[in-house]
Each structure stands twice: as structure tokens, then as C-alpha cells.
Image (cartoon, rainbow, N blue to C red; front, side, top):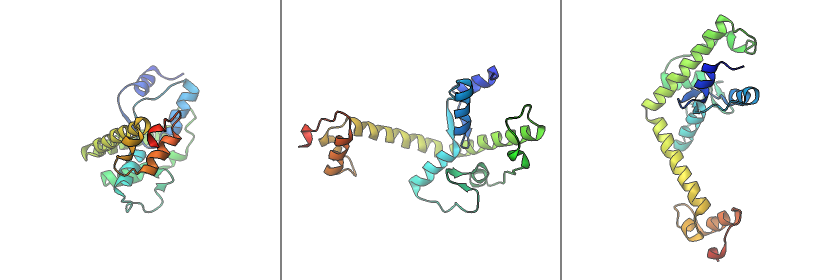
Length: 178
């Protein structure tokens, strides 16, 4: 059974900054029927920001993972300091109770995630990402609802792309594309 306070925190509207917590969220859903809300993946945010500006010059060493930067590398990038990693990271996290070393390690990662998120916010990255997301959602709505004429006039979209978008839509009305 999940602690009531933990359930409230995970399902509440307060943002929770994490570094790649998708497996943990999946486990919470499978084992407790809990859908964590307002989870912010720091490495996803970082990848989206870096991809949009095309600068990957900071990717060096072994901290780069297939899905983005490790929390240690994010701390170095955004906080200009080192996040020490101990052997506790390789211990049995499914054993109860957690050892004092595991608790200290988890608390350090939680604080580091919070600090990186706050630095991203301070630098305007979170607002920038939210604006990009809003613009992307608006553009997706235009793609999903616009006519051939509307689509073909969007910046970066030609007549062949507009026709292809309409062809791929379920129940597309192609009469205005002819």
C-alpha cells in the first residue's frame, strides 16, 4: 500500500521535476493504480531545448545516455557543480526499509532535480519550452482541422505536403484539394 501523503504528492498539481522517471511512473501505475501528475522530465526538457537550438557541444564523456543527459551531467550543465554518485545507486531499491545511504542518495537526487528545474525556470527555459509546446499544439490542430487551402498556406508547407496530410487523416475530405 502506498503512503497516503506520497499518493497525494504524486497525484497533486504541484510540478515534480525528475530525471527520466518514466519507469517509476509505470511501476506506480501497475502496482498501485496511480497516475502520477505534473511530472517534468528534466532530460526530456533539456533535449527539447537543445534540439530546438541545435547545439549539442556539451555532450562529452560517459554521462550521455541514449535518452539524454544523466542527472549528474544536468547538474554540471545547469548548476556548474558536481553531483557525487555513491555505491548506493547500485543497491537493492526494492528492499525495505531503505538503508541510511539509500535515503541520503535519494534525497540528494531529489534536491538536485529540484535545483536543476529551478535553474531552468530562472533562465527562462521552462517558459520557452511551454511556449514551444503551445505553438506545436496549435500547429497540430491546424494540421488536423485545416482545409487544403489553409494547410498549403502555412509557412514551410507546400501543396504536396498539404495533400499528403489530408490523405493521411481519417475520413479526410479531399474535394478541396482537387
